[in-house]
Image 1 (cartoon, one colour):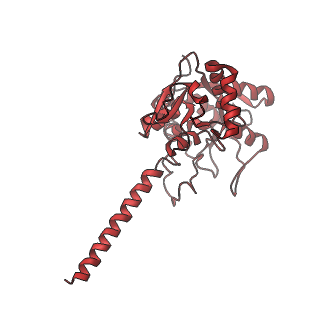
Image 2: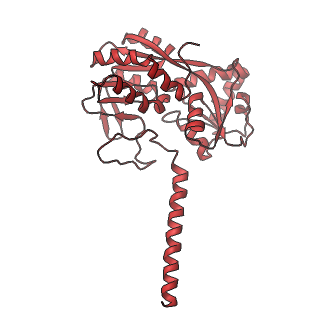
Image 3: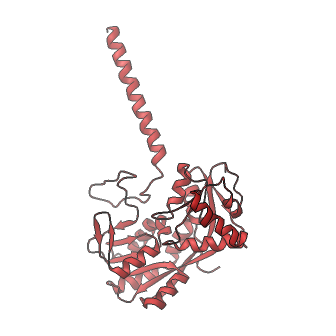
Length: 316
């Protein structure tokens, strides 16, 4: 074998190793991007994160037998929950779920459709879920709901990168000039009101104003543009130093996905706990399916799934 041939083979081998290493590095850098749930079986799977990765539309959009609009922070539960529901009620196999911010979902109900990119979705929900207070407000405004059921609770926490490089130990530290904060946008994220209530408990109106006004102006507080799930991604990408999130989002990143993040607990006297409520729509297109799903949400199998992902039971 000629020396040239040996050098050629060595170059090819090194090029292959370099390509494989680059591919592994790229995977390590992007495997936390959506979609997080397993794709439905069958058909051609096409997802190119972060360009084409639909994380908030789940299941069967054509002729569904049940349509559920879930508060978006429960995205991690959807796959297991829907599969368990189908097993318990095998007559329902085509289920469609959206996990967008609840404010966006409410607007979708009001306007009759959702436009996402070039796609228009005009499905009416059978079930809508949100925080307990928001459900009560919407009922007063619109009288949408025939029945409701509380099914989970969730306190707040602070998510930071592994090692806590900025030494964030509580909510007051989020007001520091050197700490870049990722904050849910109050325009459409119900969690923002809960977090601001915690800011005021921890440091009064001054802390809330510092984080939500002064730091927004100078760019050290980032307001999410699509969904508060941006916050964990920004911490993982190094774009933000700390993010107030629901404790389940921190749990999902740290305990389920094993990402290099840490959770900073918020003391009970400064914390806010949300109660989640599922509501059956009065004009539900699939009335019996809506009744069955609402009953399922408080059943032992559904509650076990919520416990698996760190949610607390609906009653303390």
